Picture: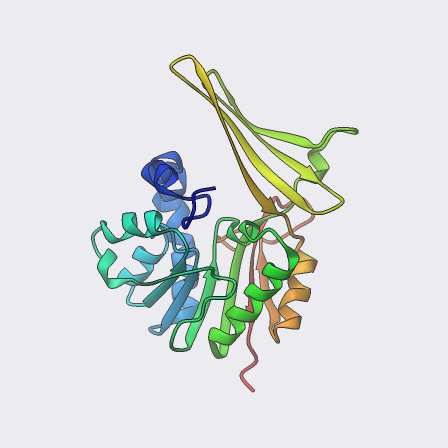
Amino acid sequence: MHEGDGYFGERAAATYDESLADMFRPEAVEPAVDMLTELAGRGSALEFGVGTGRIALPLAERGVSVHGIDMSRAMVGRLRAKPGGDAIGVTIGDFATTRVAGAFDVAYLVFNTINNLTTQDAQVACFGNAADHLKPGGCFVIEVGVPALRLLPPGQNAVPFHISPTRWAFDSYDVATQAMSSNYVTIVDGRAEYESIPFRYVWPAELDLMARLAGLRLRDRWEGWTRAPFTSESSRHVSVWEKPAD
């Protein structure tokens, strides 16, 4: 871990956008921004884990006032260096507990970032923090994968998701604790470099219970940002919980 910046220090920040180039393509970004703009209207949005601004910047371009929370100064530095980056307010801190001034029409957390909170207590606290920041009638949105336990062969605990001559990557799961990790072996100049990042996977029904504890109620759940139906075969979901207006 990189002290101060968690697992997303300078080394990760330097190559983050390039390593996830497909996630920055318009077809990946625009449906998310469309939905968040609809929920925020001409109001305000709070992003948990704002990173380098993949969603925050185009959302701000739509006229939404965006503030972000992130613990990685290195990632936020990349955001600041982009056109429009200075217009995004950012608070450095843990998004499970860090408070900022004001109330927001929508709070959101994308691309599996809820799994970066590696305990159930922290994930529960995140929902409470989101609810505390929302206006009555506001919404909390999470995009996250469905745990891929169905892909585990009997007696194994790892699922590969990338294999090439210079890089191998796999997720490992502990079904007793819901701990998981993404693991990467990269060949650089003939030498292998290994990196592991811990997560905690979480089920849709578990998230719904966390939302109820925070006083939120499920409004919508889709397979993705294009609002295809969520089914038993879906590998991810975008869920929206609402803070009651009363």
